[in-house]
Image (cartoon, rainbow, N blue to C red):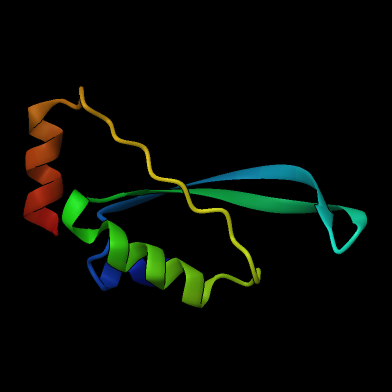
Length: 83
């Protein structure tokens, strides 16, 4: 997933290790997973979602977008400059 940085789909990726339990094909599964938070612009979201779907090891990855309205201007400027 780190190629999203070199492809300029995200300016930063936060990775959080987690333990997950989920239903898959009628059974309860347990796995170690990573929660990835991609920091990107509105203009890059659809391309980033397609990238994740193509490159994720799961058939059905969870992809969610959060609209953060109160982000400091200095950070937004950096984000746009990088991408």
